[in-house]
Image 1 (cartoon, rainbow, N blue to C red):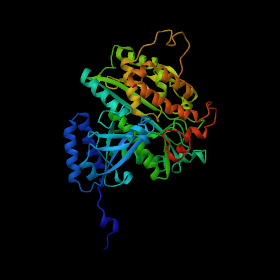
Image 2: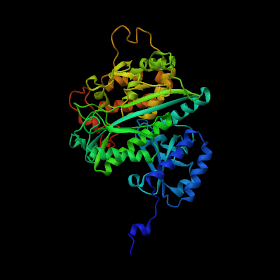
Image 3: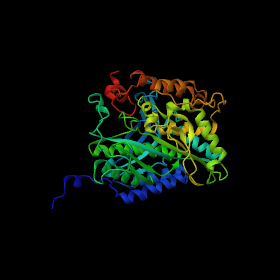
Image 4: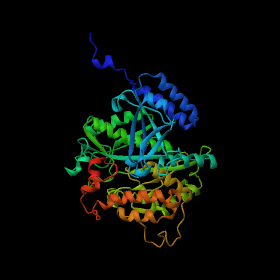
Length: 482
């Protein structure tokens, strides 16, 4: 019996999902246990040499705004020159100018993912990279590298570990590339008109959630729960808490796999904060805590609601820096539509146990799960930049005087539109200190460019430019027309 031509000519690696979960789980344990980079480099390099069915290595990095970039390197080329992987930084917004365009990628051998072949294609593995200058120094606007350095420094100096768990919401719409085509047809069509926790087992939304959750599981995210969210055609899939850098990598992979699974189904997974007026928007609620020696430092059984003095201090520092942080947590014109208290959105700069209009929430917790929930983070934010800024602010952020902190009875609220957020971001001396003025100005300039292409007043209708020029809606042709 004749075999199909593909089977005769090609034999690329395809691994069953249960085996993928075991293999990726082992790598994640090596990472959490801080196995040395040299040992992992040797281990994974040896695997790539021995496994003939691997054809390419997908190397990925994120730019200043959080867009996910991927390059496929031929396996043999990468093995010959793993320390000489270069790219043109002038083509990435927020990176190098044309005069200093050459940048390098430094492979993080702690990140080595075997990919589900039916979603990502056969014969590939994926590795994250940090962005380096030509001479091998960390590139200032690479927030992944900076988050990694921060996390390692806190552990080495004070034994501190920041643990983060995100809750990332998104929408599922009819048609591929519905965001890119919004300029032609300014309408998003939900695939489901169900609501919170409701969908038929076989409908498109449930099929998408089930498939994406299977991919997450195979990539060792450690799934917790998944379900339709409050708005029609909205979804949320939660996974285990992790150390900050591991979690940020998983946020990027989560959005990538959701988009690819949806595309395979002829649909679009969107992480626009407010794609449809009149419905709840999408957030990325960010739960964070600090531990030392395995002990949760936000837990104190004698503290109010069990929250320690350190937890209260971290909460207050984040609140006191809220106006400056807002552009980092809500980086797009569209994000300011979400900060509307009529739709359970957090626009008030205060902390609460139950009121969902508060920027910070203290969830019910025990000794293990004591944490702060930052509710004002949008799903289109750069997770590396968000986590870096929140960690630094929680530990070091300046405290406001009572007269500036809204204790006179008038509540402070987050900026209502992006121009106000840009101004507060630029005026924050603390953000200039922790990010550097060059990064602050680069980021603010990118956000101002997008803001200037959109009407200043949001109004009641979503405008085409706020989708067309959204940093995650990749339409290079339209961008280049301006």
